[in-house]
Image 1 (tube, rainbow, N blue to C red):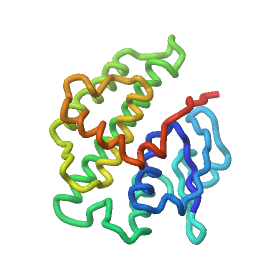
Image 2: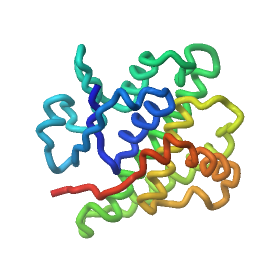
Image 3: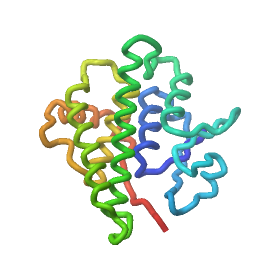
Image 4: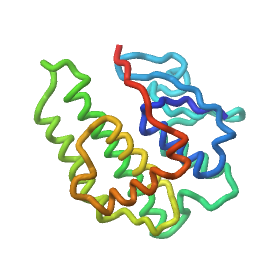
Length: 206
């Protein structure tokens, strides 16, 4: 399998960290692809109409895109314990954490447009403040919800890769006033799956 990837995408990193945690990363050929809403990447666009990474190319099936869907597929490709719980409250807890992490990434990317990526004269302060508030309120929620005593699951992977990207992009700090979350994150970031997938690079909008 081939994973179309971007070294500064939190979504792509989530899929790759998931593959490491599932023990199947060696079965992936990771191919870096630069993408941006303002610059088309023909190779990615040919496999994902949204023109975004990650995209998983399978030798015997259609391309799969969106990190959530890729993780769900990868969870069927290993013999170990499932990283996406199959039933009960454990499943909904994991998926709820994943959704919160996805929202953190979405809000963070939108906030960057209103602070550093969009031309200064086109930035809209109320949107900037709204996205900032989404991040801060989600940090508060995660402080209460994160549980380091659970077996590792997709929600943990999503939260860890989202927060790592937040720090990488110097977005509003989740460390201020969230000791439980910080303790959990620092421990998770020491896992091999995180150390083998460092973030790097800048988005190219032109």
